[in-house]
Length: 293
Ligand SMILES: Nc1ncnc2c1ncn2[C@@H]1O[C@H](COP(=O)(O)OP(=O)(O)OP(=O)(O)O)[C@@H](O)[C@H]1O
Image (cartoon, rainbow, N blue to C red; front, side, top):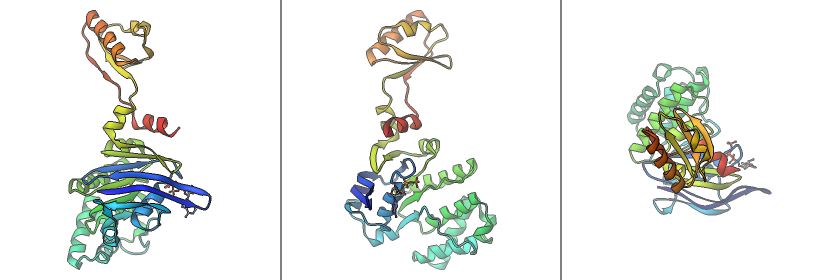
């Protein structure tokens, strides 16, 4: 488990991080979401020790993170670090060796990853000859080659086509399934929503919401409900306490407190069969808009 505890960092007058705390649980994928300049890269650099915080701590399993822990993290920095002229496989294996792997282990891990990331046929090509999306896949291989104990990835999905997103996603899921804490930043809220177990939403250097995806969706659901019946539902808008009625599929969405919603369902059941009813959970984009405003 990686834990960022009360971390603050200024650059001159600008407060990039202000008392930021969050946890990246072992075996869980945590999405780090925020607008440009919100502080994601700064937080990741502090975890990796590339930057020092003005105050606050980073811990691993409850003790202060040290150089060995950091060495074992798979890090994909914002500034991508592969040598453009070097061959993909050579470079990935070289990075594995820098992490102390034997030649054979580094080469085996490289070929496994290039295979998984569907760039094996480019293994002997120079990085600069790959498309941006394939260079991105090579970057993922570089971050994972040494079988890291934790992953910290700055925008790993940027520049990937939908197949690339799925491919990288499944590699990250496997890493998490092996018990590693996985933290990644992204602007692609739909990807984050699908991939993450947990979320940290940051704005202006402050954590605005954090927790499991399901918990955040439940907390920010407000009092929205979805009701579907084969019959007419135009009466719902006239029920006292019901607001914001909109048509949705073969039913309606509406706002109401829980007891009013129960009254609506009772009335719907009296009028005929109800095909579905339940709380309407907001999308991550809606939660994001709500917490950063
Ligand atoms: N080395 C630096 N010197 C001065 N200001 C910096 C430095 N690094 C970051 N900042 C400032 O700190 C704030 C947070 O930046 P950071 O790069 O952490 O945001 P981010 O959430 O990663 O943004 P993006 O999504 O655009 O990558 C920004 O206002 C940025 O301009």
